[in-house]
Amino acid sequence: MGQLDELMKLDLAYNELKGPIPSVFGQLEKLTRLDVSENQLAGTVPSELGQISFLKELILYANYITGSVDTIFCERERQYWLEQLSVDCCQVACRCCSSCDNNVCN
Image (tube, rainbow, N blue to C red):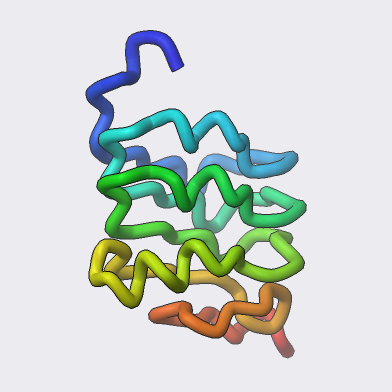
């Protein structure tokens, strides 16, 4: 991702982003926090995000994300690397999410 090698936090919440979550975010090796909540992102959670070594917070709720969260995220949570994983649990199957936004269920 070019000049973003040292990027540690990326907050793109409330930006009206559309389309899939870019799997290229998985190349941001030093990222500790990724927040893309409250957008219009769709599709599944890219498994590449689970390869970010230092990722502690992954916040994805209030989007149109569907499918299930890859098991690599649950493994990272069990090892205490991933401290927060937030999704819309009515739309995304996630057995290890730390918080759910169930407002979209209604």
